[in-house]
Image (cartoon, rainbow, N blue to C red; front, side, top):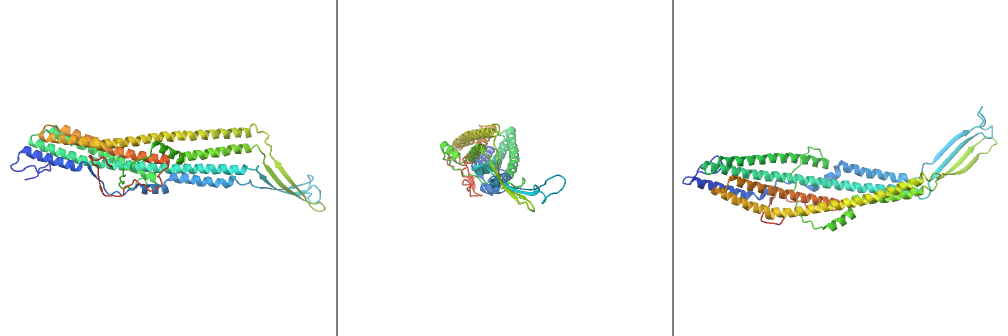
Length: 459
């Protein structure tokens, strides 16, 4: 016995060439059967929750949003404080030719202190407006936090899919190599044509091309993921942990209810409405005057006694038709605008929820179709084709076509798996549910072998 250049022990004394070819193809079939539905994963060190925790500390957009909230809180005590008191001092002289202080009755030093008091209720309304604005910014900061988490989840799942597709292509490229070896064996024994060998080699090289394109896409996803987390764009990333399939049980009505109750976008718009209502009240208060109280002292000398006075100054809203009334109309218009913005956000949330919910359910149905229908049936078809190839009843093109279909269906299965996870992440963002807690669908068994069993529909 000796080993041929194809890698098979195909020359055995007393065995015909046809038997040798049958033996080679049987070995190929056994290899395919063992490797087709088993995808071995490597050390799974990159965990989704770790990336989320890091992003919540380092992402610059989130830091900026939190700083805006902190900045807005400093404004509250400012607007609720009284205006600064005023102090005046000066000198009053009698005549133009000389300094007459102490000589003439009208010559004196003057001192005055005054304080303006807004009409009762104005300061509290200003404080309320600033508080509502701060609360609105807080809700927007929560939305930014949710958007960052969803962005990281989507990129994480895309990176996982990229690794999974590379694994599948590498695995199937080895199968094309086996088919190439079998075609060489058939050609050497006179049972096949050289064209069959060239077809197998071409398909193998096309898979290698696709693998390189996926690796380039993987590097791009890693760069975007590093940016979202707040790392240097060239920081190395390990292999993502494979998400665990968890049934999604919420109905459409439940999701909509949670979104209306918890969505930071809705809360932000509601706070804006409250702030606009306060601004309307504040504009109406501007019809009322403010008061300025002043105490004055006139310092004189010699036989002239000092003088003092108390005064009150009141502003008169004389031009209320073009000022205060227009301010009220402006505030009412802004209030109407804020209410319509709230309704627009609700419509947008409803649309996005329906879109992602339908995507989720469609992905689940397609996954079931691929796993329980197309993949096992295509595999059976492939087995029949490879068996026909052994006996010379089927051409190599048929075998290659069946294997390509099987590869496509497996890639589509994992593509729908990732689309489902991304849709769930977006639904969680729209409802603000399960985003800051420990990621429940993260697998905790790195290094184990994951098996896609075509005969089973269980996930």
